[in-house]
Image 1 (cartoon, one colour):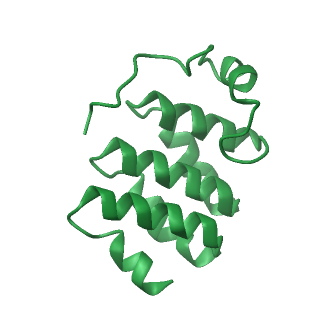
Image 2: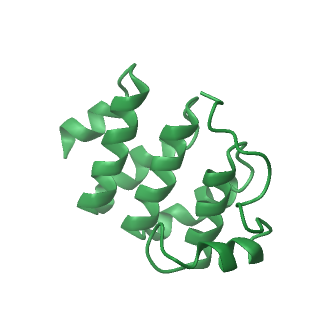
Amino acid sequence: MEPLIAALGDSDATVRQEAAQELGEIGDRRAVEPLVRMLKDENNEVRWATVRALWRIKAPLAVEPFILALGDEDNRVRLDSCLARAGAGSAGGSGENSLGESCGGGEGGGGEDTEADE
């Protein structure tokens, strides 16, 4: 797990994103604090992977960061933060649209798509 945590500091956004994803799959709560720091990453794909990783870990320490991530510029980060905060099933589950609407996101998760905002 330590090499994955170290990879969160890599200069390559793809490496950081993949490390966050792997840490989420492992599910070890020791990764929560390093992942919480990644919610401020400059890359929206990294932030999105980080929210999903924290969601998978289901760590109580992640509640406040999820609330802060509700203000993220990327609609996927906002939607998944809302879903995680609401305790909705597993990340990427089929309930995204109805829960997204209750999170103020509507069908597409709200706001403009910001995939190009890297």
